[in-house]
Amino acid sequence: MELFDSIDGGMMAGVDEVGRGPLAGPVIAAAVILDPENPIQGLMDSKKISEKKRILLAKEIREKALSWAIGRAENDEIDSINILQASLLAMKRAIESLSIMPELVLVDGIYRPVVDCKVEPIVKGDSKVAAISAASIIAKVARDNEMVALDDQYPGYGFSQHKGYPTKMHINALKELGVSSIHRKSFSPVKRLLE
Image 1 (cartoon, rainbow, N blue to C red):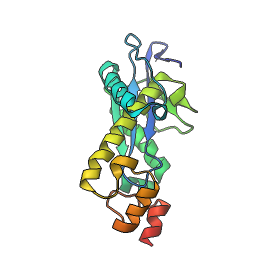
Image 2 (image 1 turned 90 degrees about the vertical axis):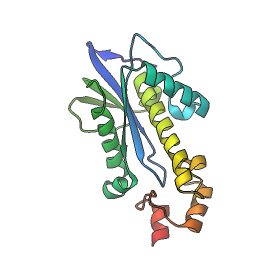
Image 3 (image 1 turned 120 degrees about the vertical axis):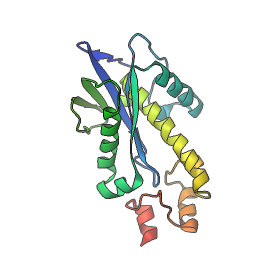
Image 4 (image 1 turned 60 degrees about the vertical axis):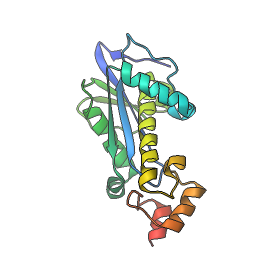
């Protein structure tokens, strides 16, 4: 994995988002500027790490990174501008919330959020660039924690188990309990129930 800590001495941030596929909850992005003097071992795509390891790594990233920030777009924003635009908005919010403004932003995927610095999309960036991996871990842990908390507010849907993804359990709960205020009404399984 490449560290890409800085570009000609300028700061570089890695950015990734989680939560494009779920039927409920926000899409959450993170931006991370790693400290080249304080490396973190074991960074990789958050989906390839156990939950326990992700939680430990997220804590280490928050402690060691030069700067990190979370950005989000809520379910009603997703419904209003679509999931791709909401993901880019969450990324933009994360980048703009960093305490240090980077000169270069490396983003996982093929799309670029519009921000006041150079942005390079990198396909499979979360498995190629340490800072993007770190962002993916921070974002995943933040979103999972939020979905666990939402499980208490919206009992019966099983958010703490499936985190809002369209599992059989979630679809059955939707049919039984109806659509909640945190569901994405533009996503077809939810849309069908509303029709």
